[in-house]
Length: 260
Image (cartoon, rainbow, N blue to C red; front, side, top):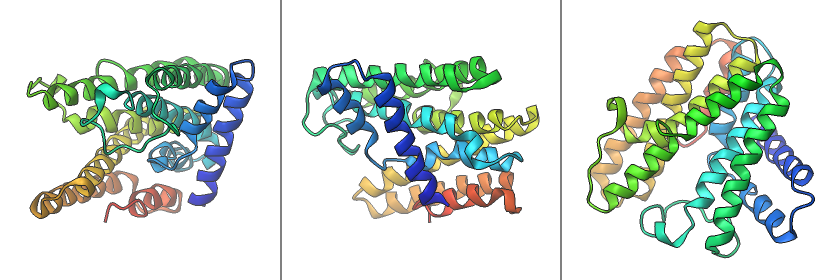
């Protein structure tokens, strides 16, 4: 099921781009498609599908939030290919075939705009809420804040994280939170389930970030410590999700995504 959903997620995102950008220059269209044609953290986008299923609907009910989450993450990631970020985010995948600062900026802006437009058109009665949550996930208390602080730290400047939250929660957890909460919202979940789904997303997103960080570390003790932290976060997320059949997709994402 997870592989099938990944394929549908990417194919649908390509279709959305083809329709929305069909009058744009060919090089720009190709860049947008190139940014989507990867498997970087697809599981975090599919939290939307898992959450929708968990809340009593089908996994496909959450697909609009998954598609938007994929485009938002790709939009931010391709921005980081700009030369000025070299050495700070060099562990991220390269999404464009060739490095091109101008195209990276344009493609990133385009994907973020398309994601918001897509949510507005496909979120039904929840469109406004979904757009609002997506903007929050990207903004001053989300991904952009976390990424800018990472740049500061690379320059030797220690910036206080808002609300005492971890850096990983800001620039990994918040977008995963959007996906998970968005899927629950599209499923018509109660406020309590929306809160729980959001928390599952934050925990899973933070764990994924820690695993990626461990993979790039050459220090054995650091890798072990990061792995322990990731497993602890996943165990907390699993406690919220439970082990009922409707949580099977959540559990698949948690335990088939290199967290162990």
